[in-house]
Amino acid sequence: MIKEALEYIIGLKQPRIEVINGEVYTSRKDELNRVDTALRAVPIEMSTLTSLVEYIQSNIDNITGKDSKLIVHVVSPTKVYLMTELDTDRKRETLIEVNANIPKINFNTFLDQETFIIMMQSMFLSNEDRGIVLQVAGNVEDGTIANYKDDGITQKATIKTGLANKDDVVVPNPVNLMPFRTFHEIQQPECSFVFRMKNSHSGVTCAIFEADGGSWKNEAVHEVAQYLRMELGEYDQVIVLS
Image 1: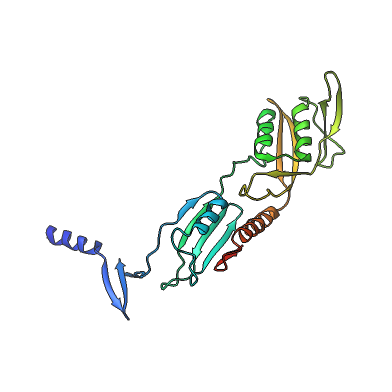
Image 2: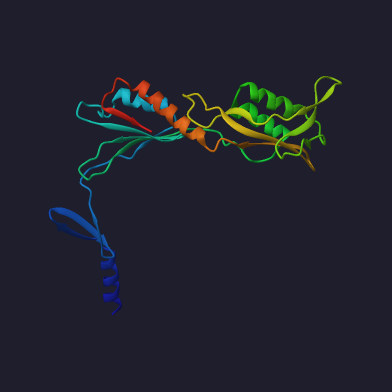
């Protein structure tokens, strides 16, 4: 009995192969799945748009023939796929997957002055508003931040303006900043942020909050697609979708 039971269990684990209308199916636990006829490669992972362009231009895998069609799909500000047209299984082969290397930025989180200043200097492109934010965050005096006009948005603080001088300033809001949030080959979108500061037991803390409703993503996807269309303009068989 034990031997028969074991043979039965082993038999259940073996896939069953059936041919229906000339198509091969395999099954486990009575569920039939069609066996694909087309072979597909494992996609190459990249991190820059330049690498993707160079791969297509090199044609190392003979993918840019006259009869072949390729789709470059800009999925998001940080992800792009290179895919083939539909094959005999009505599926697409993903040849390349490009994922942008971008820093992790602590939005919507209050940080101590030093951490906040380092983040602003290393993860944001330089522009006028970044300079203003750095000046205020780097020179504000502990305990001087207060609500101003009590509208829930505007604040004022005392900052050092010289060796001995101090002035009350209104904390700028909103501010337009350019964080690194998409591929470095394109201009980083300039977005609106709310800049806030507050006093805490450990000193002044600062934070920036996204205030554009995510519209920067649409702009970034458009710019990535435009960059790729320009770089691959000579390849009529390559279609860029965004």
